[in-house]
Image: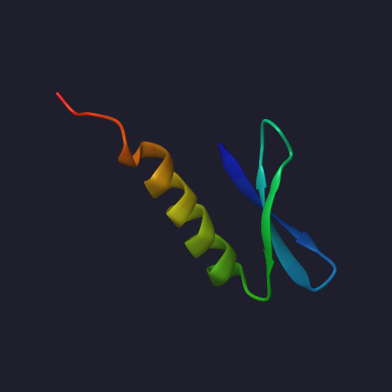
Length: 49
C-alpha cells in the first residue's frame, strides 16, 4: 500500500510498509499520478484468469 505525506510545501509519495520514497512533487495531483503509475507496473506482469 502506498500513501502521500505533505512535508513542508511538497508532497512525498511513500510506501506504507517499507517507508521507501517514490519521489517528491509540487502538487498533490502529481503525487497521486505517480502512485497510479507504481500500481500499474506492480500489477502489469500478473496473469488474469
